[in-house]
Length: 201
Image (cartoon, rainbow, N blue to C red; front, side):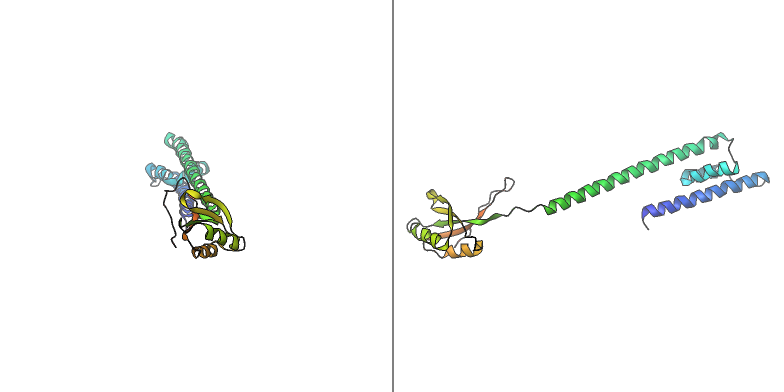
């Protein structure tokens, strides 16, 4: 059983017991027998039996002229109802917050994660002494496209053919004469620390 179910069972039980306790005390009062202490009657209301106490007073016409019962029992009932409403609001708010957090997590899970490198473009560094002629020939023969020629650093950004995978294309250019390194074209987000990632031949 959950905590809420146990609480409901307790409240139902304590109110039924309180209702009949008030009836028993009324029955004893009519027969001038030993009475149930008023502290016990009020205590039952305080520990959750206020509805049973109020109904008992109305049903058995008991303690209706005593001020501590006439005003005390309704006051206890109002306070307990207010506490129940307050707890319910907090529980509802907590449940809504959890639902929102769960929804936000699910939405975050559905957002595609940015790849760490371009799926089509890769970088090739070549030897200055060998020159880029062998590389240009390989580019033409393999069907690649020159995206950018980094003339200052002896390197090129190449786009793979649609019919070839990036890994197969990079592996092919590692074997080209004069090629020093073949690297992924890494995507660096502004929140990421700058870390050089080089794949050497």
